[in-house]
Image (cartoon, rainbow, N blue to C red; front, side, top):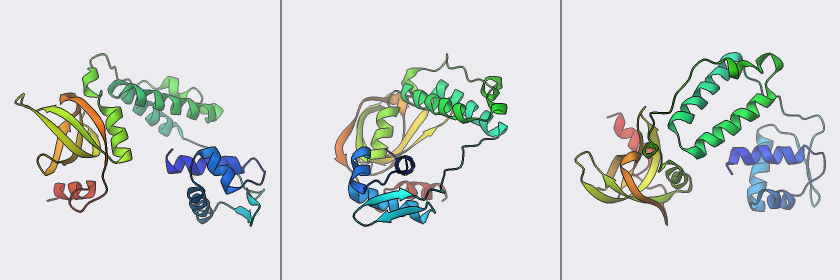
Length: 225
């Protein structure tokens, strides 16, 4: 669970009006109590009025409520267009998540915008899309998020095949291709790899930490030179 999602869930738990212990929150969200205490401190720093009683627990000030989610017409249209583009060019997992997000957004739209998504006349047909362009995408996203090294066989433009192990750093979409940039252990340098040229890929058990000269910020710095 992303930290932003966890903070939102903590607020939802506290909105029930009951005093809740950090231990109870930790058990419900399946995280450590230390994580919950850090999150509670962060919420307090952001202005969420928390009432805490030593040895008892936490609750929200009764006068607090989260503002409603509001979008204007142009924002709704932009979200729908983005969702349709992802539906054409992304993997099934991403498609499912963006559709779920759109459904949630539609449920809280004001009445005057309820019909807006259906009126958007911008489409992104996906019948020309080959699954090979995104098949490695779910596993790569997981590897980037968890900071696990990623190994695969790669076929270059000259049809030469090599086995690579990289520190995956970011994924880029170029219109008809997805690429991953990472620190390549074979070349000891940053490299771009097209996902449709990968095969036999897998996330390894080996994790990596930021190391000077091998981070995404270091890669981006090379683009400015």
